[in-house]
Image (cartoon, rainbow, N blue to C red):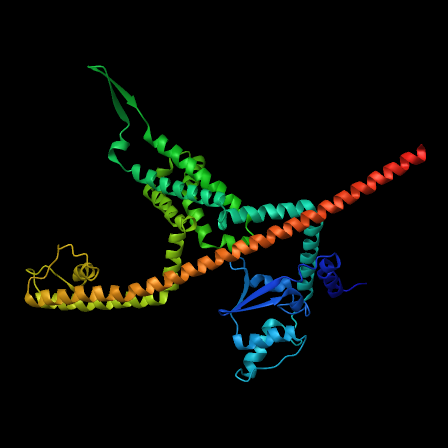
Length: 453
């Protein structure tokens, strides 16, 4: 009986036996702590039991956005590991790397006998290989997979004019939903009676239930965003990563107010406002502002800039806290303790120090003594200097984020071109097979007609 490993190898090599050699010539991009490497699929497939040699094993390290595999491992050792594949088995330890680190990297990448294949993992690889063969064999499955890929790209990677138009339209709807939330709080809109003047003395009063109007508008917005969320969920390439992502949390939170109201009213037969605080539901709707990060490139880059500069941001916050406590203490003691002073305590002086550091200066609390005014002057100058020192950091990080985004767009366009060519080749092969079958059937019918004739 054929063993599990033999069947797995047969299924993994079935694509090349069927003429799918284009897969072996594909480039594989690997990112090891910022240093990028490129090699070919057939180079890694020389050792199919290793981590890099098996597509199933290395798939969990794949970044679909950047089209690369990312490993947080030692870069010096990875040069030797990549050379192991390129030289067909030659392995050498770098002189600058200890034996413990080198052995740890070999165990991680499963080289030189460090295989961790269990029967369950081999069965999983066998099932994955069979699934890939089925997807390649049946045109309907291949078409469904292509549709899911195109729908996911339509939402997540807007490049074409149609995709960008949809993104702008969703951006406008998000802004309008926030505008409707703001208009609901107007006192004039809350009135349920309108008076219409007819002629000189005739007036007509119309009763309008604005709660129903705003509820209908909110239903329209919620339905639109729900359909979009469901399409993203059905077409995502990685369900676990999608469910645990920040964007999914934002979508669920923003959609929850309407569904919470429906569930509460259907279960308790009471208004949702009597059980769930209505201001809480409105606050949850404010989470839609975070959806702008998905539709606007500038807001997305702003978020990435803040995340990338978190170390400098923490230093800036620490500097502000230190200056706040220091200057608040100086102002409090320079103004003198007692009921006659505006600053009754050091925590109460924090307000004056913070608005002075930020150069806002409301003027509701001001020092009156000469020493207090001098301290307030240094406080204002210190806040200006801190802002000036931190602004170039944000500008540098924003430029890096923009360059990274531009490079990603170039990679996405290049990858779409490769996928389009591959789809054309698959379509050409399927059309050729279909025409060949039609010719064989026509020839058989013709021979049968000649025999009976």
